[in-house]
Image (cartoon, rainbow, N blue to C red; front, side):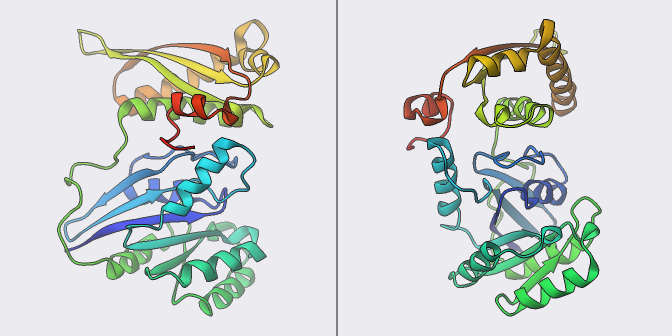
Length: 294
């Protein structure tokens, strides 16, 4: 049996979380078209009869502009330690940038097997894709083009991954698909819906705090209470919206996703509060669960 951990690394919006969710077959990471969607290290576990692949989702490689972003980038840098394989994910549709080439060379020189995964091939011109595969093939032995959303070439990717993993026992029980709790996923679902609804800087300055996560005695309904923390009073006004319309709408979308995830009805209460510049406060970052050291 081949089992091991696979660090999934790439620039912001390369499609890492979507790829992991599709490979695992369950939603273990939130997804949005905005940078900085993934903030923390999250495991997604694919269990097969003859293998176990432990995917390690990481924040996108992104220029650090705040203490929170610095924490996220350290998470990326540390993610190649104690893993068996690296997947370096590149958005093929965007074309190869100089940064992509530099990173591909960097990861290919590690003492860890590396696979370069070209994503979004369903919307990438064929001549561009051929050119990218050829160029990256000069840097890395294993280059696999895929489309996670269309399910293209995922079996081939899984085959290559398993072939490079060591033989050994499962790292996790075969019924486990993630290392994150339901409470954590509830927080992330709320943040995902805010990322999808609001523009500009507002969603990046949001943290979610779970005040209550409790299943009622009848076992049919979860009572969930969340604080939505933002950085500025005008951000709070936008999040709430005219007559509370914006917060009601985004909370409704979040509640529906939570009910799907938990398999039970949810009574959701949300509050919006301001903590100015919390992303640059080491104390507040720890309070909101972003690492022991920032």
